[in-house]
Amino acid sequence: MPGVDLKRGVDPGLGEARDSATPNVIRHEESRLGWFLVLPVLIVVAVLVLYPLGFGFSMSLRSIIFGSGIPDHFVGLRNYQDVVTSSSTTAAAVHTAGYLIGALVLEVAAGLGIALLLNRSFKGRGLVFAVLILPWALPSVVSAILWQRLFAPNASGLLNSLLLDLHVISAPHVWLASTTSAIFLITLLHVWGVIPLTSLIFLSGLQSIPDDLLAASAVDGATPFRQFRHITLPLLRPALAVALTTGTVVALAIFDEIYVLNGAALNTRSVMMQVYLTTFQDLDFGHGTALAFLLTGVTTVFGIVYIRGLRRVEH
Amino acid sequence: MTSRLGRLLRGAGILAILAWSLGPILIGVLTSISTQAEVQATPAVWIPKSISWDGYRALVDSHAGAGLPGGTETAAFGRAMLNSGLVTLESTAVILVLSVFSGYAFSRLRFRGRIVVLAVILATLTIPVFALVAPLFRMMAGLRLIDTQLGLVLIYLSAEAPLAIWLFYNYSREMPREPEEAALMDGCTRLGAFVRVVLPQMGSGIAALTAILLLATWGQFLIPLLFAPTLNSKPVTVLITEFVGKYTTNYPLLAAAGVLAMLPPAVVAIFLNRHIRGMLSGWSG
Image (cartoon, rainbow over all chains, first blue to last red; front, top):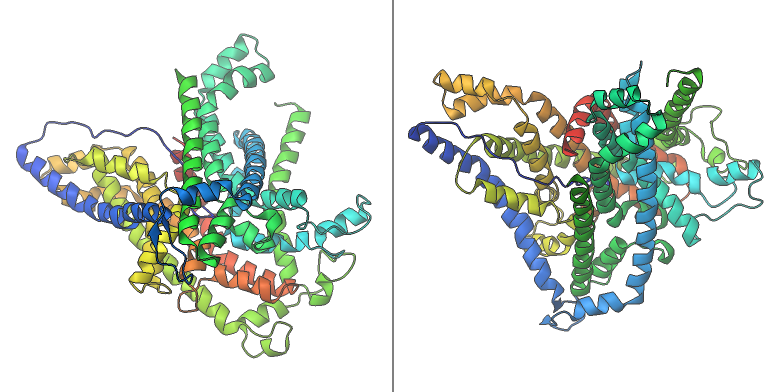
């Protein structure tokens, strides 16, 4: 979502329509209505997703630099080669790995914890849910603005002021200037918006565990800890795969939070920021699309790895 | 965990969830009603002594803003909020119709090519929008649709429709079929049964998808940053980031803009939160 950009999930497997004996007339009507209802979607997907995908790929194989005076020409895979070997890509990839690892650790830990806490019904649970969902519902840009004063670099910044009061630090920190603290704080802001989703994913995983399984194991003398370790955790694997996939897809595309808090500063640039700068600041569409396609490839590989991991456990 | 310690821990955990979720929002609200002197004080003033509306006045009151630091942004801010609202409603409506129609068709109707079309849509789910931004930009530039609402709606379609269709397909697959089958037995046409029986049955799914689409579209940033360069179409998310550059330390004004831009999605999330939860849980299978 936010980037509520929609936080995308992957659900393996297609369902089937049920077969029931129907006369031919109805079959014909059904088929016509089916195509009538689906055709607009097909056109949208073809024109606005598949065509730009192909167009983008052809752009990534050409040298296209606006305002350079050099006419477009085919360069094969050279854009990809340039992008992979460039030091700015390496730096952006390292930062993005930092965001990704931090985000996944925090999302899984907090998401699982919250799901366990909210799994049992109690008075006011609906209200807690309404509050829990809020950070996910807010635009990431707006969240960044709300958080901004926390990270202000002088002594009146809230984080600095708090830590000065507690004598943890002796002088105000410029939090966003050092790579480590900047990436950590931006990650914190990022997961603030994703943890609600991760919690819901784990919660629906927990609720799919049959109660009698836990009851039976309790009768057999299993302690709550052993139940958690040997029943709950293994059965949460599918939820974990979905949470990891979703978390990875949004973390690899991290952009909005960085843009608001630290602009295009070198120490926090993500790969997505690099794609943006290359394509729309340098107007180098060839290298920009090549980097974007590489990022797409990496995202897809992660998704496949998680889903494969899930399959192996199920069999 | 019925022990007293267990209950105490659970209570503390729930308080922590509330503090973590509401804390930054509360800080934003408090900042928006502080004065410039208060946000620059050392040590920091977390809770202002009295309510100051300066930040909001600069954004909504065209007469009062002129003398304030940061001047007045009334016209721009109002226009950007309007742009956000209009484009959000338009794209939500279009994507909703597409998702409901196709969700029904994919889950209930048998027609040749159904599985293939479904597989294509599933495959497009794995294409992140950033892979398409540059080619879409050139397409839209060619069609002269940069900086138009129509252009934005088309790009949001590209970014959001596949997931919305998928979510709604999963939802309608789970719905009981008996009411529709009964209507067909009674001699209803397929279309008639769809309109009179199935559509009303989809109420909660439609509410959930509407909420998710409203939130996702209102929150869009990178797309309008590129495709909505002027106030003709610029949404509030993009305008706010320009304020950050312009009024770097005018935290009350920035926070006030943030709070106002936060209100519509917050209202949607609070009122439709049960529906949203249902659909998001469904997506994890």
